[in-house]
Length: 155
Image 1 (cartoon, one colour):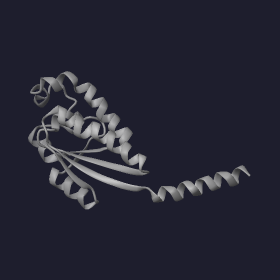
Image 2 (spheres, one colour; image 1 turned 45 degrees about the vertical axis):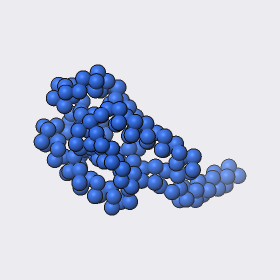
Image 3 (cartoon, one colour; image 1 turned 60 degrees about the vertical axis):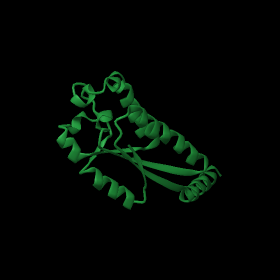
Image 4 (cartoon, helix red, strand yellow; image 1 turned 30 degrees about the vertical axis):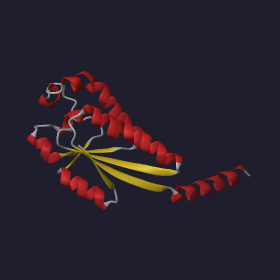
């Protein structure tokens, strides 16, 4: 009897999982303003994910990092990009914990422009855990939009 009930629950769960609609968004992150990054990426993702969850839908988020946004994801305290922003320098460790949490909790994919990393001498080993590198921002945006992601700029 227990096996039959368990099998029925598995079948019902699998049937329900197929009906979940997935919403997809790619943020084009270039802002150098910490407040904008926190509000429009970290806080907005939490709010948006809970909205879609309440609708029995899923939110898939990707963030393409370039422009002035590299600095949020650098772990090397001596980096000139961090040194230029005193406010960020004071809170960068806390911010990095929030970025890792956002990846784990909401499945955000952070993709950094490899071309810009080379120009800024950013070593991939100096990135927040989980941040991946895309050849350049355009390729990252093209790929995500061709996968059906809606485009939102964060400048």
